[in-house]
Length: 241
Image (cartoon, rainbow, N blue to C red; front, side):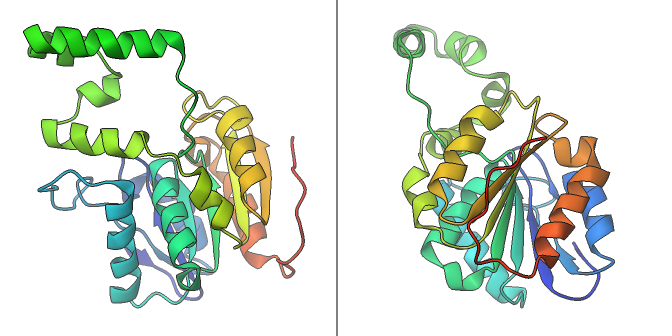
């Protein structure tokens, strides 16, 4: 999907989502910018994967997509999983991007608790004797809904910590998290990324993991403010409501 004319803005959706999740943002931005929103391979209207992709594989695909689509150093607006891919690309090829806007960004692997480790051990034991039962009763509902191949891809993605990559990014980064986001809480992922990026600003607004859709008018105003801001070399402060 591509709409509008002007400076390029590339929208990257989250896991198990699609380009249409950015409907309100695309409709707003197309008035001033050329907005491009693809479906990641394996999601939406794209072709299914034939092997389990990692974040790195998606970043390679994204690099090729930017070049083949004729996008000129786009600003990337990425949600959740899309942020993982954007961060990976920005760390390796910053010359391809002008800046990042991350909402509900994921990519920080939390310290494993004893309860988590115990559940993993139980899963591995049960899987030996009752694999179907294990797949049905262990893991998140998101994980259980995936095909076997996509489960392998999912495990590669969620187990990769992107802290080192985020620390390499010197591009301007606008972080926007929902105050009620329980998937990627602002007090965890948001603050962690804000401390890692060299030139970032964190804002917390009302809403959950999909705050960009729930309160799209407020979200879109923050995006436009970032895109039109003249001075981008300053060290931004954290901003809270």
